[in-house]
Image (cartoon, rainbow over the protein chains, first blue to last red):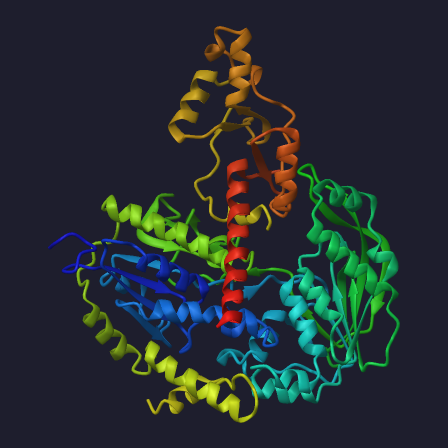
Length: 466
Length: 145
């Protein structure tokens, strides 16, 4: 057989996970000159785009514009999408190795880190990821229930997801109607009784993970006032020194905005958003029905590590917040894929710069790669996954030149398509997704909304008459 | 970004040596693994020092037989270490200010988790900025469309 990467014998790559990293890896593969490449992009959901569809907040539509870039990639010759196909259920890694020269895993960080405090198992305490997936219409989460009859809510964590959750809880129905939030979530949030939302950060304002536009947005809510506590937003000497040494104007501006909220007065808006700093939850208290009714928090102070980071340390001062609903957003990790080595310490696929590593030999598994959050953990913005995916694909191309990829028995596009069709007759092609996309846009337009999502796989299949 | 984000993509383990090994052995390991420093651990696996190319060069100026010397006579003993949860920006600042290029990473139990170099940190920062630029460009282009 001719060399791999030629018209007669194209380089065949399967990418598992059709989120940003999967599309960025695809894009970089198709940029290679002098190589004929075929990419099959798989996703366990019928719809592509991963967190752009199911994670990015519905009131941040502009961030979703990156899908136009992914659409262009999907038009390239040699690209196919297999949606609604799950690795380990519909097809195994071993089977894939019979059809492809290389596999790239880009499944993201799908779960959250637990909060190991007494009372963490009480009802009314949820991972923020579940709430996010619910309001975004992720089919696996559409039937989840959140008790929005509660008046006071705590969001533990101060990263982008925590900010999204707090903001969505405080949006008015009119604001939410301008978004592509799932229709059932719009309905539930429109009836919400939530009056106060606490966002709790372990460290101080200078260490907050959210961005300046995000904290600014808190101050521009239609029907929610934002507050901070004066003594929590005054910089301690360590933060002061660190900020002035770094001359980081972005963080300085962020701190100024946070501090300005400390002098806010109530303006009569229905809801309050209270951003707390230097506090950590230590216990959740329940009522007689096993539901969260309060949270004990401890106040922290900062200390400097050897390496120069400012870390929180508990003091003796505690307080109790009466909250009936708690969302935690204190870090995310990947979920192991069947047949793929996993690094439990960091919640990622076991890898060396993107090459999947055999845990026994500590050597690369030939032809298997990873990119994005399942490679390095959750960090950065959507675009951060581009250089990451490019680096992994470059290793794949090096291994192609060195003859270190998989030697599949059946490198045949039609044969794998037939196998998938036999295993999962309701698989979605990219053309199927585009039809679904048109329907969602049209259904949304009929209600004056940017999009009305299908939120169950059955509804998606039915909509296409498959 | 945290230090753990770099460790997540390094599974090859850390190259270590014992303090009583000769510099010749350490230099051979450095050449073989193409690395600029070696973590020095005692028999219990506890960190006791770090040996860098710079340590060897500095010693060679005054000691012709540096290659025959034990690592313990050449290594840096006061090692600045980082935790997996340390902020990468802080680590970068500390490395730059204190002029060293490698930092062992220990967990809360002082167990060796890995090693990061200034190159790792710069690469992570480069990717962060590239990613932000790409995201902003994409949004700007969407505005134009």
